[in-house]
Length: 176
Image 1: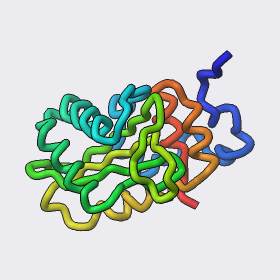
Image 2: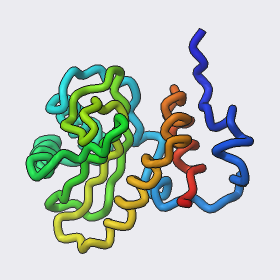
Image 3: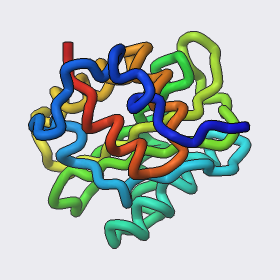
């Protein structure tokens, strides 16, 4: 039987120890909402993942899907945004965007993503920033990378089957 509860609630004495219900949100959860989370995306390739991310984000935030897709593809052409361990952080600057937008996407089956460890990717954290933004978003990007570098966090997050659980797990994470 598949356990559909978030592992963070099961490992309260491990990863989540010391996290209090009234703890202030981390920077990541401040830019992400449960409605920005898409789970079980059924696509077989990196290109289709980027297309579906573009559709999802554009529909949610009233953006041009073509512009989002072109920006993500352009950034991937510079170098893969895959970190390894099944994680990627597709990010791009977007002309006409007035604020940072984030999304979390999990694919049903891991897809090849040119990761440094050669492993396919199933968990993607997407960041879109205004084209004229300074590098002020780089600390957030670094925090996302640190979060996904936490093995306990990754393992727990992958057991979350609902967007609300994924959001709660992200919100509970704290930098070391």
